Length: 284
Length: 133
Image 1 (cartoon, rainbow over the protein chains, first blue to last red):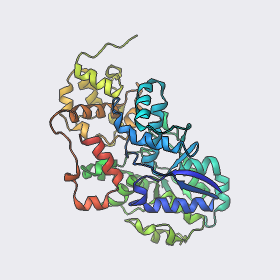
Image 2 (image 1 turned 135 degrees about the vertical axis):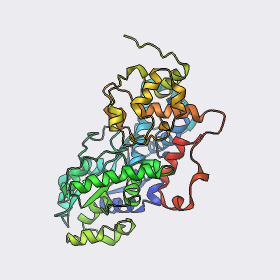
Image 3 (image 1 turned 180 degrees about the horizontal axis):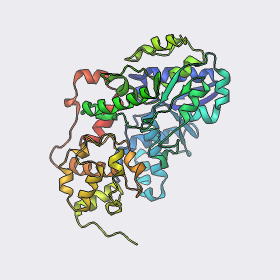
């Protein structure tokens, strides 16, 4: 069984536990496992961009250094962890930042063994496992289910650094949706911000941003929205005051299609319970 | 051709912190049009950059707009001139937050118990890192 060094991050062990659990279980069905890297620290949740803010990037860089002892690939699942770790890595790789690299690595003072590729769980699915192999393992095709793939900001921007997918019309989750037998809907707000951390002190602004995303998904006929970001899931699912569209982690539906028991997938964590909709589609 | 340096020392320090060249912006407004918070943000991205071009950095630093950026990076992604306003807003906040007087907008004392229980900690980390000194 292929094994990947895995960075779970803070939110996936608490408020987004179902993302971590469903992802691990689904990957096991696909013949791979996530092995949590030892002694990981918080990535910082957001990338600090001020040029001289070395300290703000140390936590993320420390994870890169520690992961380098394990292998050449580090898998992330939370969109924020993916964004921050990949940008921190790119920052010290850029020859223009040689001084920062030296100072930060000296401060961390742990062996930086080898180059580490920061990848997302979706990269593992599309590049290492492949859609055909995923399709071959589907036990319960999600036929008749129309899904809006919501990527948000952190999976796709800045595009030059992340190089993950098209920043305006990303496709990877849509490809997964097809592999699972469901139908990806057109969705204009795939990469429109949910309001992110503005929920902490400007809930009014975040609520408006999130509502627009849901309204657009609804307008294109989606039965549910899928995401890979705990904060997108929270903002879309919990801040709403009108639309009742279910908002799930893509891993929950991946697990369902792969034949996992619905009880194992954490559906009860959603504010808008997706199970009545899934039952209506004959999927539960 | 090399770019003319900004006249204002404050604008020069914002350029240094953000790595952006304020003179590169030609005021097309793509950033403001695409900004998901644009309606609430005052000034919106293109107007904020215009203030810097005019050497009126103080007005921008005193504004609410720089505290409404969600760092979603749509503005920089779509800018035809390669200017990233999210980085400029962060540089402006850094200038304010590094002033000797307490100037942060958020902190443990501004969060309700209910929000603390509910909102993913990812949001608190991000918010505090962007909006507190």
